[in-house]
Structures are given as C-alpha cells and as structure tokens.
Image (cartoon, rainbow, N blue to C red):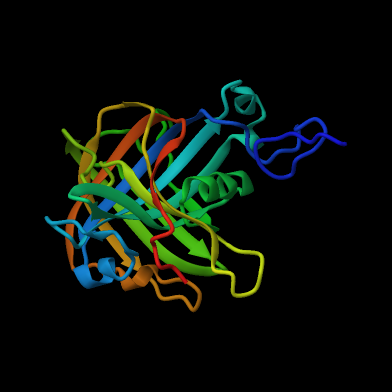
Length: 268
C-alpha cells in the first residue's frame, strides 16, 4: 500500500507539495483597522445558531487590511517570499456564545492560495480578492508612522471594487480597537459528498493567538466607502457611525483551536 504525506492537499509520497505546513504558523504584519457601527440586524443575520449578538455595542464592525509575511515552524518560507507574503482584507463583528463575547470574521478576502487553505482549516470564510494598502517606510515619499501620515487601502473581488479607505494618523493610542480583540468563534463546514446529505463537518470552534507581540498602536481619522457587487455582500454592513481608525505592526503565532460544539449550526 502506498503511503502519502502532507498536512493538507495535495498529499504525496514526500509531502513536499502540501499547500500548507503543519502548525504552528507564524505571522508578521502591518494592520490598518477601521471600526464603525452598522445596523445590528445586519450583524445578526450573519450569526448562525447558537451565536447571538454581543450584549454591548452589537452593531460594531471592524474592517481590517493586513500586509503579511507568514511561515511554518521551519521559517523556510521567509527565504522564498512568494510562499510567505500575502495581503488580506476582512470584516469582523462581535457575538456572544454562552455568555462569553467572541470576535467573528464574517467576510475575508486574500490574494494567495495557501492563505485560502489555512482559512478553510481555521473556519475563516476566505475568498480570493485583490487587496492593496500603503506601506510605511522611513525614506522617500512613503508615509512614516507619525502624526499626519496618510494610508490608503483598497479591496476588490471578481473585478469589482468592494471597499476603499484613507486613514490619517493622529496620535499614539492605548488600543488598536476592540471589535477584533476577543478569541474567534468560527464555524468549520463541509458538505457531505452525497446529494442531500447535509454537512459532513459542522463544528463551532474557538481560536486565538498562541503568542502575540505588537508595536505602538496609532489612532487616526478614516474615510471609508463600501461598494455594491453582484457576488459580494460586504456593503450590507453599511456605515452608520464611525468609531475609530488604527495602525499597528504585529507578530502572531497560531497553533490550533478548541471545539466548542458540533452539529448544531443549522447551516444550509
């Protein structure tokens, strides 16, 4: 009998072709976060059972752009940058499960296939998109991390613009926001192979950083536009009231999650 290896597809005799390595996964990134309030009903419609709205500020949303370098335990991807560098943009809300507040990613777009695969494993609803954000640099015309620095960010998918933002830094901050500040409550879903067979995988899981370090957060003012698309629904999270905007450089380690319950989401 042939033996095949690899943490994820494709599994081969050597395992070298696996799209992603075994955790832990290490991330270094620049994050641009814009928080605002939307209609809580639009958040509620994205929370399958048994999740409920957060008891406080239930309409709060964080829209986050991130420019990442990532790798497995060997760190070898950092010396083969096409396997390490990617960008993403994602929308996070808060929810409640058994009296505890969680963050939950409801939409997310990335620009590399390995990032999609990691998201499927973690319960992030990742899709491919085109994501760009201004990079800081200490020389030339690029913005420094200082008062008055301006950062732009764009998101598109399927050739349509979904979001555009400009953030102007104002001052150092004690926080980088609150919406994305809890452990994540995500669902892992996989339809059964038989027609009408429901879900072969139906799990509510908790996940968070196994380790975290971060630079000085900065806060500022944001201009944010959301655009309609025939294939995306980000614009349903309409901007009713701005909360804040933040810039921060971070390092994160992800090393697995915890099963909260299975077979109860009622997803179709």
